[in-house]
Length: 392
View 1: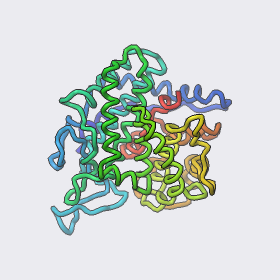
View 2: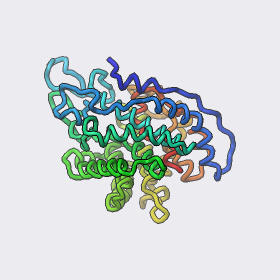
View 3: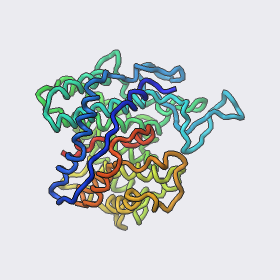
View 4: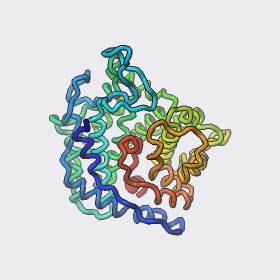
């Protein structure tokens, strides 16, 4: 049965994007804006009509937390037909549609609302978009009746096995565009400075939990896309909270842990290729690498240009995957067990990489791909859906 959040999520407009033409490198940002403008304004019109839906809107009796605690259940875990009522068993890559994901869907919806409103504000400087964003930010992070607790202790639980896992921390990648959107609007005359400070305090608390809890330590140590996404989140939230020590730590981990252990010398991602959804996971992990570079790079520490001693780099990673993003019929590995037909979409690795390396063909491919996917699995693995707020 689809939740209210899922119905609202899928009610958003699906739009066709304009075709691309040849353009020069200085026009990259202009072309990105031109590509996204009509979608942004239509999505923002939708967002202007939405009321907040936080984690308190729906609860699950199986959660060990309270109504303010984010709760989700592991996607690939199913009832054991040999032991009904016993611990669930894993079917990697196969999503159980009966698991509780209403909080995740609510967070995705929240992310899309703030991303759309912030993007529309950048295009129009109309304060009405900021005022509407404040309604949702207050509900999620400030209002004691509806706010979410600043932890993910009960994320991706498994019935009969655990009340929550470190692996569940990946669910809050959806909060990155909330943070990025707030930063894009923060200097607006309509911004409530006290509310913004309260949101910043919420994320400071969440960062402390990510870096001190058992679940946080487990996710940080993960050797595949989960470890990359932990660093990506921490970097995004640390920039928002002005935590330079954590930003430096994330940059160092990118250089010394993520690239050397996750990327092969040819630019492929072996830990993702061995999964049951090698195409989708490779795309997702590469997007996380590219987003990390977008967050952390500075003139004095440009991660886009960083490479290991044996030549591993994000540039090589994008170059490796690009031919299959442009034409997935060339993919030489097994097809994903689910959602093969839904990938790729307008991946952030293409648009960020195009700007970083002045690769017009990457941007042209990004322009042609789907900028507003409707498949839930794709949406949740595409945390950067409003690139305009990341590149201005």
